[in-house]
Image (cartoon, rainbow, N blue to C red; front, side, top):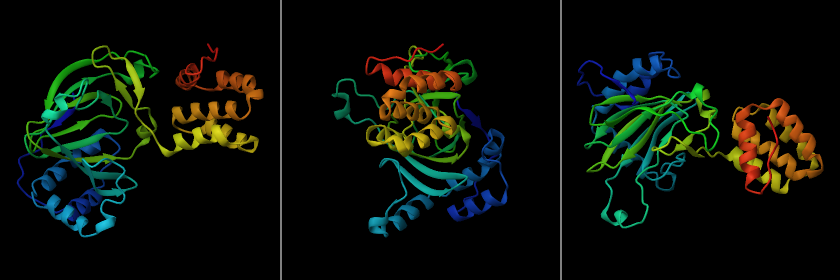
Length: 297
């Protein structure tokens, strides 16, 4: 379950600008659980201000076509501030509408983990419920089809004023719809965890169903495999050897094989010798779509 934080009772309300100023002035190490926990009282003070979000969105609407221009999320997420070390967002949680219940197999959310820490607080409404689990990342490779050992199952409700931390690559959850529209505020630090693979998991078995993270680098490497030439092999070899994300490394291996099938045996040999197990698993998973398999191990 996420770590619930219980700061002292505090009714002080601050503006978004004041929150950011105090966050910077406090020197918090937001990449750590301890630093996020220490900063939690500031998020509570911001949450006490029930006008700032409406004022922020109203100001954004005045910008017409520039409304949320830097927002890569869907319409239920508003980015309030972004900088290299962290970003702040507001999440809108809508109740499940009756029409959705008529769709076969409809689910409000999927069971997933995160490759970033989230410091969150209930801002408005009754709040979502979350069916949560924990797992030990160090005990698993993270391969597709692998079953994670899920434990500490519980239901967590993010009501107004409640503060918690979802820990990167530790907490797994599936959000359940609130009875009425609700809003949460999230402070998300940018850390090395964001290069980890994010999982969708079968909550009944713990089986890793797919990787959720998708970045422009994924698409770029896939495109290189389709339209690249021999001159691109060196760059792809460097990506395969050095990129921090194992999925991108695996796709770079495959792109080399696509561009130069005559070198596939040599590329396979080098991959088996130098790449970690998770990269090899992803390569095999991709190759299996085409009836091929890398014989490693």
